[in-house]
Image 1 (cartoon, one colour):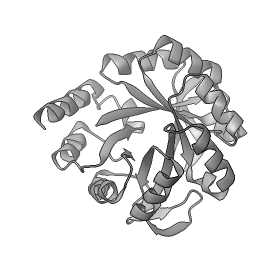
Image 2 (tube, rainbow, N blue to C red):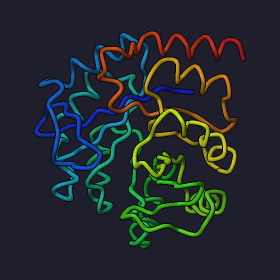
Image 3 (cartoon, one colour):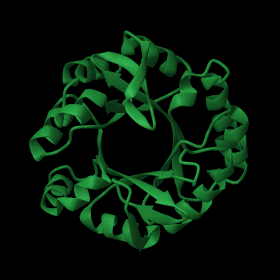
Image 4 (tube, helix red, strand yellow):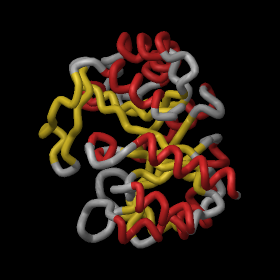
Length: 246
């Protein structure tokens, strides 16, 4: 299992956006290279990049920075989301050294594009989906009546490699109480699952690892990664100890 920090980039800087307002954000660091250097020193080997400018403009924007990050940290696994609205835009990220393309479930409304990307970039596509009470919430807020099992089987057929899942409780944000839903989600999926959020402390991680679902491959760490109370190196050590014991 992996811990995957989320790096949001806007105007070439590392930022943190607010879940309810993507335009409300604060600059975390002017140089993303420095943040990644710290993460690698803590034991991280894979990151999730969100190109915030690309989301706003509908096409890849921070490509030179991503290329620079890949050049400086060649052993680091990189997945990216934002602005992947054509096969050409997907190629731009891949040419910059990205390992995986993370697609929003909105792409399912453009099936021909989705199929083309899956064919062109076999084993490099990750689907990002929301769930609510075990049911799918396709991007935009609507609820899909399929179960995750049915949906993951379909994605597997298309050639999707992994799924990033955010479970949304009624409060609208991920918290400690809904970590337990990861168990249902991962066991219901045919594909490797990466859970987005739910970890607010090293204790949360400990709790999850004690009840680790079979198909859970990793946890994405968002806002908590910038909390000074959260010790990333300690979290990596907790994960390593659990993996050695299993």
